[in-house]
Amino acid sequence: MAEETPNLEAMERTGTGKGAARQVRRDGMVPGVVYGGGSDPLPIQIPHNVLLKKLRAGRFLSTLFNLKVEGHDDVRVICRDVQRDVVKDLPTHLDLMRLRRTSLVNLFIPVEFINEEECTGIKRGGVLTIVRQEVELRVTAGDIPEKVTVDLAGLPMGQVITISSVDLPAGSKATIDRDFVIANISAPRGLSDSTDEDEPAEGEEEAATEE
Image (cartoon, rainbow, N blue to C red):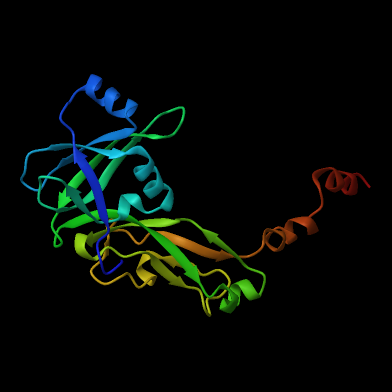
């Protein structure tokens, strides 16, 4: 994660309810609410274009922000949900949760595979089959990792990569107790099906029997 927590600027929203939220959207803003942290919920609004830009930049739901609202103390938050228009897929509402840097939170962290060119199984024609593009980890809010790295160097054909075989970022722990699969290096389909090609087809077998 970056050394400095990025700022997320918002304005306090005076009105509540569906009618007020619709007016906020007409004004080019996205309504939201900040909750948790032992304080009362705070209705907010964020410029639509600002929020859309941050969403398109990626990792919005797994980034710790420093929320700045005029008239209120800065607070660290993480987004727990972004509601979108079912037709236009544009943000219509967001929920932010207050966090301390020491708070523990479950987040989906992307998985990055490196050193494919040094993978023994891939060199021999194997195929990397990714089962999970991201894994859910329990992490400290002040130290959210950017990614989980899987080093493929030297891994053979048939290798199954599970969560226990990966070095997780410091302070992180998988939320699932079982040793689940992240990816595997499998033989090419043509190679695995080659034995089937040597067997006679059903019609050919019957013809050979009749002869």
